[in-house]
Image 1 (tube, helix red, strand yellow):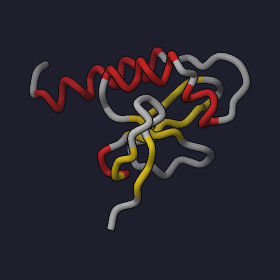
Image 2: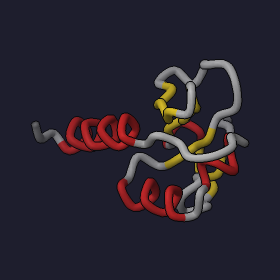
Image 3: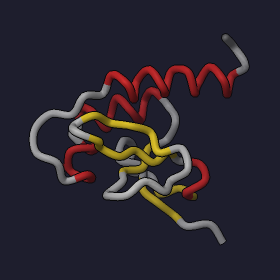
Image 4: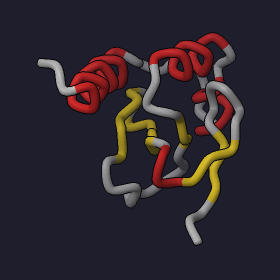
Length: 90
């Protein structure tokens, strides 16, 4: 049985295997590919809609319990490339 996590964007519960784990390293959001990096993690669907909702609702800041702003540029770039890989486009 797969563990269940809640997406910080859409707030829908889903199996851990369908979500991406995100951690904050020096106020920068980074995707934890193996879901094994130390510290708190936030879970999000690999979809632009969920990422946008999480940023608007400050879901990452709350879930990761970090003060201030987080740099999301790296996360957005990785999510775009992840979506391209899934869709088969370049």
